[in-house]
Structures are given as structure tokens and as C-alpha cells.
Image (tube, rainbow, N blue to C red):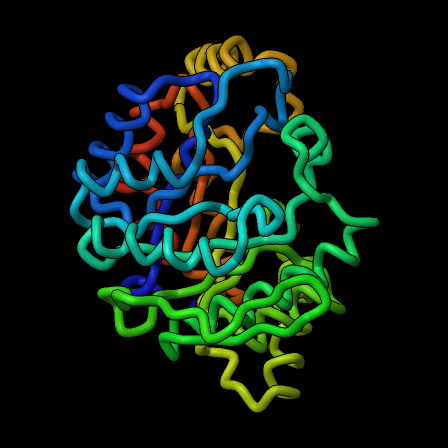
Length: 313
């Protein structure tokens, strides 16, 4: 077995729906104290994976709040909706976050998919997912230019900018761009060309291995070392308990707080979760991010850090 003991990283994606700021601040502080490597939240405007008629906090504001209450983990959206904001403005936002956090920002970005919120807020949604992926490619090219060169010009089909500057520069010498998704013709191509990290969610190890192979082939086409791109795995919502009755009670609390929840919860003992993660570690995923829906579960947060991470390798 490959020795991954010095490379396994963990994060949590804290759902910013059906919750409140004191709860989100508390889980951020607790994750920091437990040595989590990354903290994430969603970029949506209405709740997802549950009843959309409910409360939802804007993502970048949550990250800014965490920047003042944590010291260790990187901070990012998992992932930013490219359709919500002008890409040059996103670079300014994430650069400000980098300064607020002392150099811990990650620019997470994806094509966006939830039409309901776009209709409600009057945001352009395009003719379909393929068009939004073309927008994403243009957008990330502009973002990368601003972050890495300090100035960029864009003359694409959708985005236009003339010598737009990013001043001040981020604190990090290379603020990472993370792209989420597994589309083989466009998303992974953009990832290979421009990104520093990649996230894929809730696929089987066999599916993940296939996607990694496609990403590697795109890297080869662009003359890029595949090892330059960090591979991160989203595990979905998770509960760790040893006692079956306690496990079901914890799941019931999540379902009660997130009405009409329509996402399966990864649930079991620390040993079972370890085995689940180990299958992905064996094919090259070393950064595992689990979702924390409200009510945010401290036992799962602690045991993922203290029992699962050391045992994955």
C-alpha cells in the first residue's frame, strides 16, 4: 500500500443553508482547532439538495467572516458559480479574502447548474450547460491572467476586459484556482489548461480513476505535469457514529433541519469511513472534503480529523 501518511489532507464543506452565523462561526473555529486543512462553503442563493424555500447565506461573506475567526485552513467556495459575478470582480474579491485571511484563499469556480436561483435573481443562465462551460473557460483564462500576471485582457465571446489590473496582488505567490466538475470534453480540459486543483463529487473509485485518466491526457496535450494539479474528493454529507441508534438519530436531525433532503448521507463507524476514503487514496486522491449540513455535528468533525485521517494511509 502506498504510504500517504504525510500527504492526506482533510476539509469540510459547511452548508450555509438552514443555519445561522453563530453556528457557522463555531464549526469554523472548531475545524481550525482540530487541524483541518480547508474550509469551504457553497455558492448558491437558494437552498439546494433540500427544500429551496428556505434561508441561505451568501458564500463570500461567510468566507470573510471565517477569515477573522480561523488561522490555519484555506478558505474557498465549493465551488463558485461562474454565472453570478464578473470574473474580474471575482479576482478582486478573492484577492481581498487572501489579505483578510493572511494568505489562505482558494478561488473555487464551476459552471453553475441551479436554474431556479438564476431565474429568481435575474441572472443569465445561457442556452445550456455546454454554453456555460464555454463561459467558464473564458472566465478562468481571465482570472488566471489577473492572478498570475497582475493584468489581463479578454476578448472572448462572453467576457471582455481591457488591461484590467489586480492591484494589490494576492499575498500568495500563486493563489490556487480550483475547478469543480467531471465533464471530459470541456471541464477537465479547462482544468488541465488553467487550474491548480480539481474537485469531483460522489463518484465511485472506478469512475474517479477514469476521470483522472482523462485529466492526465488533457495535461499531456497541454504539456503540463499532472502532478501540478491537486485532486480533491467531495464525500458528501457524512455522519460518524459507532452505535446504530445514535447514527440514525444524528441522520434524523439533519433531515429535520434540511426539509426534503435529497442527498444520501455517508454514515457509519470511523473504520467504515476510513475504508471508503482509502479506495480513493489508492488511486491518487489525497484531499478529502466532507459536507457538514446543519445542525453541524461536532462528533463527526472531530472523529474525521482524529480517527479517519490518520488511518486512511
